[in-house]
Picture: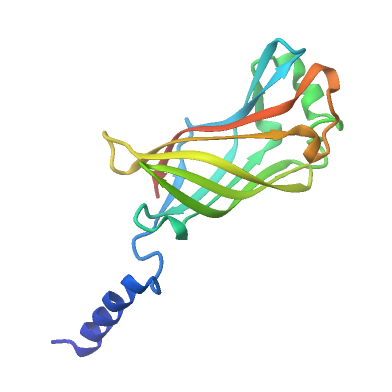
Length: 189
């Protein structure tokens, strides 16, 4: 019998119920390349422009048994944005909106995962656009994928105001409210 190993197991097992040992079963995840990370916004008041970031770096540390210890980060390359109305790309990348030349990335860093039950979470975090950081809450579903235990299906949404990030209001008929969405899968690293 190995005394140090046995003592270590006893200490760890005794501390888990107290919440002192954290992230014992946390797994590291990254978004699959097919995952949609983007937004939609009204244009001219009647049509919707959809946009997808083509280059996204992502990571999540997550254990469904201890979501309070979870964390997630995203870095989106602004110039990788593809739009359902390509004619708007120059305007979107310009100084009045994303100002991609000066601010090439957009980021999200979580601060807290709140479990709501039935695989539903509120993820509080900070969104940074154009060098301005604002708190946001992502309403999120993280479901185990029935066909692949190495994956979690994700649906995550929030709404922000463009002007909160220094983007001009009502510029070029682009709406003020922006629906941000992540839809796809996390893959275990």
